[in-house]
Image 1 (cartoon, rainbow, N blue to C red):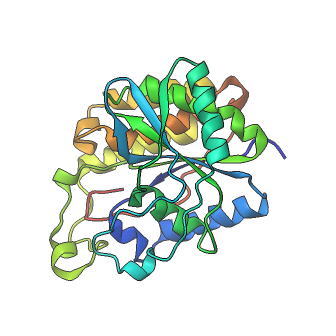
Image 2: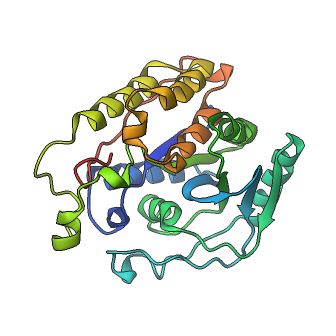
Length: 271
């Protein structure tokens, strides 16, 4: 059967939970394929939970609540039961600690929409056992890549590794008026700006034209791209991509194909 696939999803705005889109359809397709494969569970890193200093945490809350979601009716998410996989979580903590990470569990953390938005879209019939990994607020790409490479071996055991962040995610340069006034996150009064399209193309080129250790090097170089700071005013939403590159960028992954499976633009400039 081979190694379980790895996904990086741009979760977009909160309205991606409530509105239909090409990306939502693709997330559901990926979830259906994972269920057909009979995955053991999901290991996921989002963009909205990070730890200070050199620390990372994994959620060990057995009954996490969900942070409220703006612009989405509660019926879309309130009754969806999360399914923390505490056994796998504790195993991941041990794996990361053995590699020298300052890591611990957090038994009070409530899950945020960047994670459960994706889980609801992928698995509307019920949440699979899930391990939630934090990012680190220093936003070191190599650090987050090493987290992914450390947990990569779980792919051999049929765990699905997911990063949920953003390929182009600069909230300061989005056009919010249609969403704020009309609840229309997909309104496109003009095409995306040149800086957004240029960085989007750079991301696609790296994902689809490199593999193995070359993928890891190319992903870190994206943070030196001339348009990176236009596309990411802050680094938080790009760290999940580094996590995924670590999980999918081993020598064994050389020549493994990758695709851009779906493309949705919100607020004019968010991809």
